[in-house]
Image (cartoon, rainbow, N blue to C red):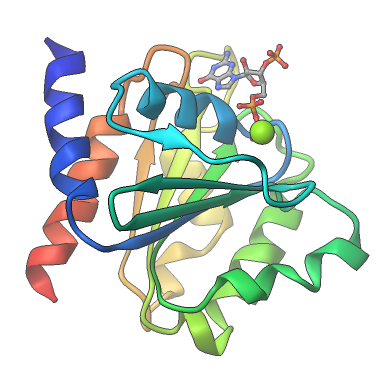
Length: 180
Ligand code: G3D
Ligand code: MG
């Protein structure tokens, strides 16, 4: 049932041309979230186009996903994938308190980028099944999301292992499309 709704939402979303990039530190759960999308069989992957970049093409929609946990030297080329991005999905490991500062740094670096000025940001507070994890509210406060006025943003708690919360995240994204 859950899977069906998810597949419907996902295919609705994918039938339109909207570029989405999925970012987050390594181990945040990006690949697992992507796997949930792949299970709905409306997507296929193209070969890896870079050591830390994966491209997924669904009809005319391009999904570029990369880990921002790489070395500083690799990060400089990431912005070549920013142009025309409508949505940024930022995946946060809610148990990883130590590296939340790095995530914050990367978030604000992205938001300041010219090519991402029109992008809306969906933050997934992932791994909510883990004991002692930060809540979405705590992460929101730490990342000072309420200070972001020039980009639409939304934070959604989720568990990529079960798929819980992923639908709600996509729903927010589709609701944004109506606004534009
Ligand atoms: P990445 O692609 O962002 O680097 P992955 O991250 O998707 O590879 O996930 C990293 C690890 O976190 C994986 O564990 C994965 O199973 C786990 N993980 C992802 N999402 C969740 C979640 O919601 N809850 C829990 N408990 N674990 C999650 P392994 O052990 O395979 O490395
Ligand atoms: Mg990965």
